[in-house]
Image (cartoon, rainbow, N blue to C red; front, side):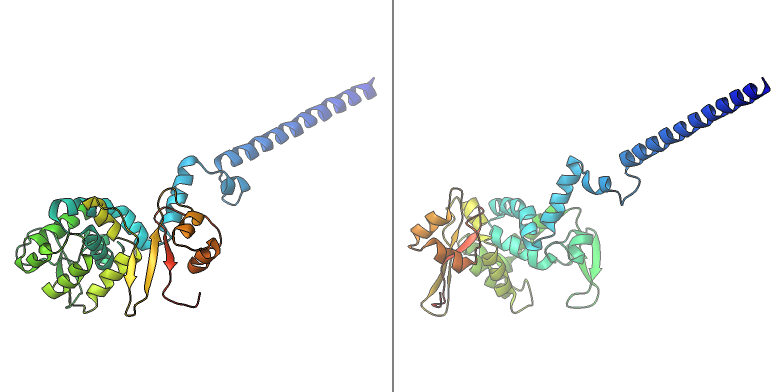
Length: 283
């Protein structure tokens, strides 16, 4: 009888121990599940692969902005530049090129800390906020704005309200080369290569197309003249264009067009510039 009692007690103890063990397993599973849900461990696979829709948008934005800083700047301010052109008759191409050059594509100190995208100094008439920055001389006074839009508007007013720039407004509204040289001649910048820098930006990023949009002109094939009789002709890709269609238009083969532009596929994007007649005769 005593032996049976001992055996009974042993069985009960074993059962209790077994239940305790099961309880611990359940707790562990819950902890694992909680950890995966909260993503407490940044090294877990879940943390690296599960991305919300908003995070995907942010990632794509970062990828886009991490590419060509100038192209991103143009995309951000082209509408403002065209608006100013409609109101004040300053070519949008010139405004954008000056903004790119003077602000370091929006990354310069004056643009970041003062929203000053055109390097406009205080002068005696300025009563707004100021920032001091080394330029031609140490710690010169520059204008500070609430937002970049105010900087763009002040740029328009700066050019239209000063007599020394009056001759620029007699030029054709899309004469960006005339404006580039005229700005330097009128004293906007001391850099002797200022006109060439503006023109290079305008032609490389096809900023002249925004002048055409404001004026209601078609964006024509861009032709860059050289010192010789040869020309480099470029075609700006528009909606509906195909590599075959462009090649046929310029009496080329698809392979020639791909060679001229170092293309590895036939995929095109709107606004892309293709060389359709190179200067070099080596092709």
